[in-house]
Image (cartoon, rainbow, N blue to C red):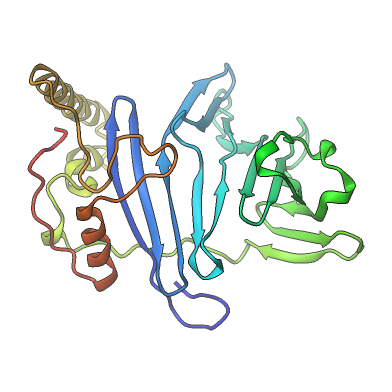
Length: 291
């Protein structure tokens, strides 16, 4: 992707693995050695039908994204995820809205951010508004969760804008908002995937190929049947391990849901990540598979 500041491309590597099947949890590691930035976390969602919409929230093992900036004395920032609502189910016009609070914290710099995604009105066009504060905090007494509870003397800057458009920040003691980011011209960067011949048999593209093909061809009953077959094989494998008193061990990460919030790479994980950096995707097949 283009780094924006210097006009040249930088490479970002992304490694992920489903580390737990019950509950379904995936660990991920993101790496950009050229910029000295890495990120990691557990990906788990919790969905609940509320009557008129579906609420999608982080699961209990999803504590957000942990970003490490090596060139700034290894500062670590924890970014939590807000909940979202998928509405319009009854009228057939699906729309995503966010009305929640999330946080960014860095204990080393003793700086915290509260971001409040504002609830939309019943009438009118969605504004997708967000507001927030950047302020000093005490990591040992991190109890402030509402913008109105932050002492004025601790405020470093205020944030306002639309998370679908322009977001501004205003430094404390000044009145002029400054543009932080404009997401309007941004777009997802196409992923570079390993060639099909280098993909393992349990990689997502191959593992779910039959289900994906059936969905694309609108053969939904067939897709459901294939999905159920895979899930049944997963249950059988889990039962076999239980009978043998064996525990499930991920390949690229040290634990299914540990260390809490911050997954760590195994030796094979580091090898796979180094291969991604060098464009070498060849790996041996896994000796133990989930299904």
